[in-house]
Image (cartoon, rainbow, N blue to C red):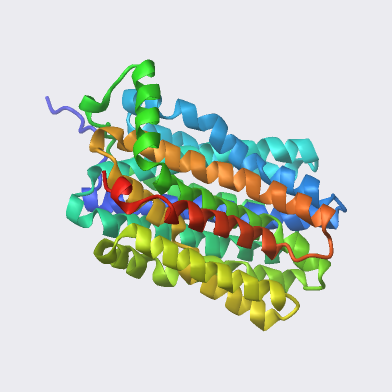
Length: 395
């Protein structure tokens, strides 16, 4: 008697898995890159104050912070795949629900939910890539990680142009795209972090402290990138409207920062392998500050803004991937999961403080360019990294 054949789902190769994870990173960048300027413009058109607008923009990163302390234990118990699947589900479901009800608090809760989902995607994919990449290909793989996120951030703001057709359209289009990429995870085989890293909750706290003591300087660029990303996408559209620029033009200027980072992401990663992360970080931060100073001086010029955003993106648009690589260089493998989490937390703190402080600055000093907030933040970042002795970093 012949038994009926069981349906076998063929799992993809390790190489294909890597590219699916990279595609998920794109979705994470895309959703964040879209929701910040889109909601900023919608709330500005509803006459919401810039400080409340900036505070509302922090919802995404409040979600990231809420989820961060609870990421490590589930990923060790259930593996990478379930965490990523749940995170993707939260993202595309929340995007699809946005048009159902126009309410400031309802939208804030959805932003928090997207932040939780994005953190699951980020932590799952980032840790999977960093812990399974060979040392000789780690820098290249992380560069692709940053490149994919930057590409998503470049495409995301373009969705604001769909507001002219219908307010619900950008949310529905992004939800559909997120669902398609998320569904690819069904053919990926689940794996687990190395068992020698499994510790108790008390051990986890101890490892966070150890990671902070060793690699705190490596978390600073992630903070700076979060500050920049959230401020440029969440508050610049508000400021741009106030100084007379049109929505369609702003939707083209904003992606220039992420587009610039795409061009130099991999070259900067390779260059940092040769000359050192610290030297590259100091150079790009100083040069990026000059770009934003020029943006402040010529902010009424569309051409100047296009050039400033593009060149600054080429210089400091790689801060997050450089932060990950710097952290990976400094920490032993047993502390990498904790280091990845703390990199995400630093990014989140920067992302929360950026829109709020910038929005508050606009309310208190309406006649002063908001670009000076960014310049000040970059100056603090530069001197903190500069005065951290390189011999101490190398320990």
